[in-house]
Image 1 (cartoon, one colour):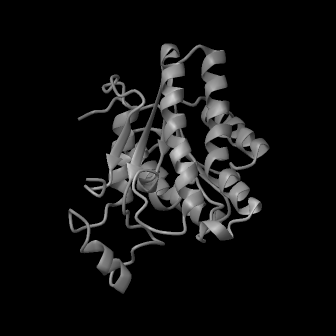
Image 2: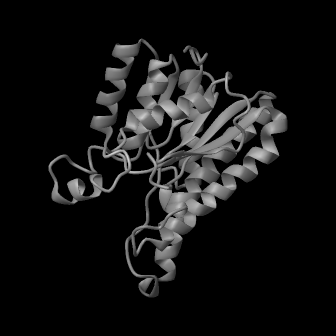
Length: 253
């Protein structure tokens, strides 16, 4: 199916590795030009962007920014407009700043760091995108990458992550309600256990133990997450508004 995305321009935060890389590649495959945001590993991001540009014959621009900082988020958006000309799609994928620890050991600084790393990037980047769309009187799509942990806290000592991913879910639905009248669609995906270059390495004892507990018996791939993001950004699926799409492979059942 042609999702009618060719010629669109997307920003994917944290888009050079993990789930973000899968989303970036699928959007490029569908004909989107993509700004690939990364925070620190310039060499890998540039190599990844170059490979997609050659493979899919679209523009793929690696742009460094720490999107938990307001000025850097604004710079990322401005750089994208300068290099790619417009923005049709924003995928809020970047997240960090949280640490695993018991609740009673959390300091105020731990709470604030998690908020800064998880929720602030969504606020800053969405603010840039929404202002742009409203000023230009144009529609667009935002997709927020959530987590199963916001709905099923099966692990312990991650309450800051649970709290702010849960807040992101509520923010997604609230933004969807507020901005759909302007032709701006806001949705979210809920990944489950996704095999990336850093997590769930084949052959690892813990990985195999977790895999046997999954309803499908297999981990998801970043590209599978990208497929669902692409659908949510397609003009063919205009009835998807404020949806929080369960992509957990049955983990939440």
